[in-house]
Length: 166
Image (cartoon, rainbow, N blue to C red):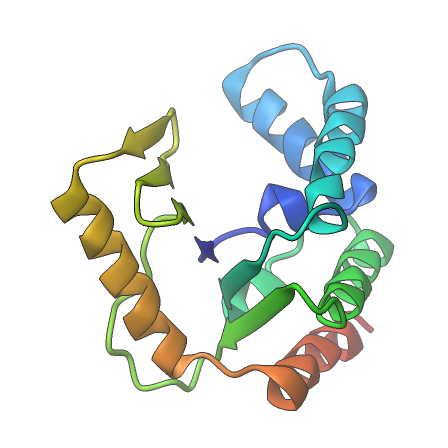
């Protein structure tokens, strides 16, 4: 999974998800069911803790800095990312602002093995299954992985973002 704009849904705290979904509802002019939707989103994230799934996640450092919700909401979300990094089935990389770009920031996408990619756009999610297109997303993920930091350096960037909240 690669995300350049927000914390991916499966990694969101309920507070962060509610703040984000409420903002989306206001933008789209739809009824605000963000509290119930956030609870459902968090429930679906149980996949991180069940079975023997493995997750490779890449976030742009901007994701850590964009303010979704208030400072307490952001601090809770960033603290949760630190906790998720300790899971043995989760590899979380952060692409620093200072990284020499090999690939420009892209739209959010999810790879499901080598069979499918799901790409998030403003108004829709596009499911890609053509082998050559899935391979392009896999190549992008591989190249973005090369400029990401993991472990201690990633934790340091997350901790710096928490400190910057004040």
